[in-house]
Image 1 (cartoon, rainbow, N blue to C red):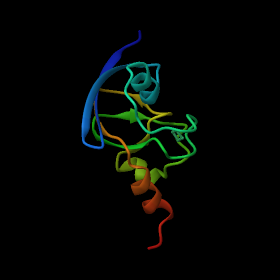
Image 2: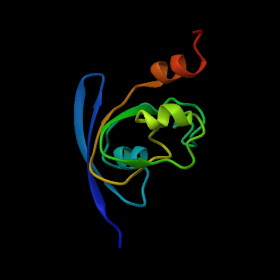
Image 3: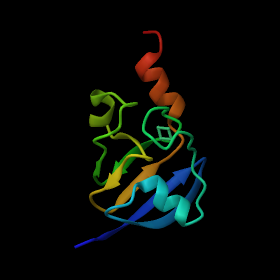
Length: 105
Ligand code: FES
């Protein structure tokens, strides 16, 4: 049975709400709801759509662009992430993910 979850997303300080059916990626659902979130490849490789999950659970088996370590901290690529519960997300984390994965240190 398909289920629908509620998502609250903040992007540059702007908070939006939308619903995501269990078989639809979070980015696609946001797009369908006319919510503009950073995106580019839609395939889990570029990290443009990186976000941080503040509350709730996602599954992102095809998320190649984010290391397991960062995934464990809640970072997700919204174009390949599916909701597993109601969610609270902060979008626009590309730089943060990039720095953490490829930055110096
Ligand atoms: S849009 Fe490229 S990784 Fe999601």
